[in-house]
Amino acid sequence: MGPPWDWDRAARTALMASLFIAILPAGCPGTPRADEPRHDTLLSRSRHGRPGQALAGAQDESEYMFGIRRLRRLYCNVGIGFHLQILPGGKINGGHRESSNGLLEIATVHRGVVSLFGVKAEFFIAMSQRGKLYVSETFSNECKFKEILLPNNYNAYESWEHPGKYIGLSKGGRAKRGGRISLNLTVTHFLPRRIVQHGLAERKAIPERPSSPQGSIIDRW
Image (cartoon, rainbow, N blue to C red; front, side, top):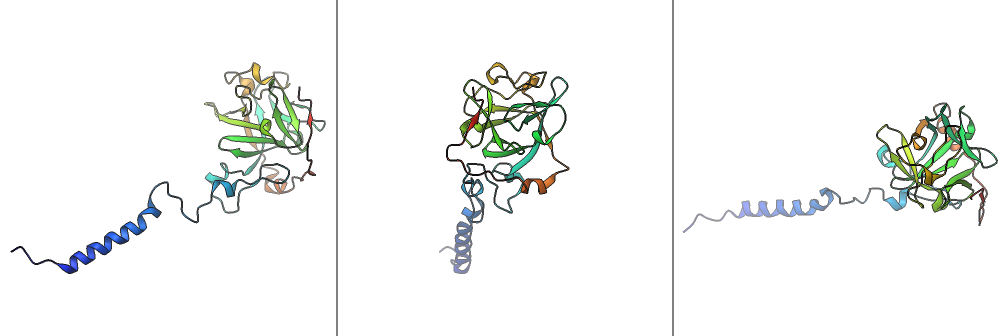
């Protein structure tokens, strides 16, 4: 006959196995917990079609990915150096001096895709099928730009709706046609500059625009 069966040891082993199986799903990589924020709840949109803010309490690394607005100036080191700006009348060009026309609200709308909103002019930057920059009161697919991090730590902004067309400024500060330039050219390289002197107070003071069912575009073609 073999050695007597240790019933107490077998019971303890079975209990430990059942406990391990019960807690395994919560600890497996890639398994979402009930208290984890979801993409569809973090990325909201206002009734104006403007990308919304993330829920309070989101971690820093997830804020960039899920709709947090960043107030920046986009600096292009071409010619004498220009900041991408929207003039009150809706013209898009580059300004050498820092001004409120160059304050842009950058909001993530998809993973790696952003919108550019002029704080003072209250217009979105958009790009037509012909690669021309124009402004729009309402948010649309032509207002989406793929934000590309370049090896020199500058960013490039490619039209999401019309791939292969980029935001760019000439040596004189004029907006260039997106289809005539490429990532290899400095005119498409922009450095996002933080707005230190304004901070969070100005972000909260960004005015809401009246709703416009059809919206409007200026100088699209």
